[in-house]
Image (cartoon, rainbow, N blue to C red; front, top):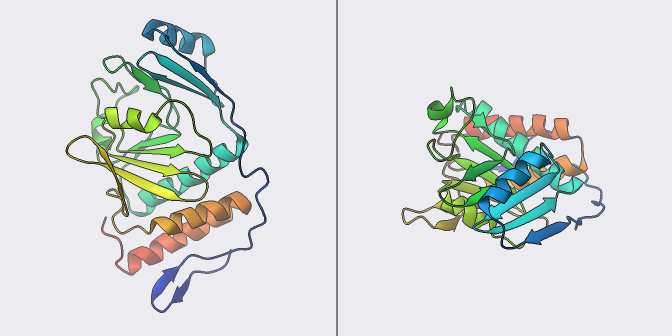
Length: 236
């Protein structure tokens, strides 16, 4: 892993040669079912059991199944590791929810995020064996990998659950949506959880992790965070 460099006083993300990514536009089969009852959805989840490669999204009577691709999972894993590294280096409390199934019967919605985290609200769920979104706070940060698009609007589900911050990554650009006071998302240039964090740098590290030594890239990312902190760019 190359060392961190500075260019005219600016932080520069270490670069490594990146080979071409094979199958950059992966096929992720999806199946859409209209007119599905809430009870059928819950029974289906029970019969399905734990299938980490399958995402089941339910939105007010419609259900969609998606089989995630290997590239999807690599993006999810590496971006998740950058978030874990940030919370550890910034000494922020964190409880990860992974891609567990979360439901809200009162909203008639249910889904599995790619990754999710309680950070500011972590003390409120710290001792909860199972988090219930009908009585417990929603996760503070969620992640969606969008290398393919579905029929159901998953971003609208996060919005309905009032998740404060959503990161989406399409294999190229990392975007941050922050919940406004009126309950709608607004695209922003900065994370509310990690103020001052250069989002483009995160995307660069994710690309390096997909095409190179993942562990080496994360070590380089942690070194980059420490330099970012030492420069006073962060405001944790």
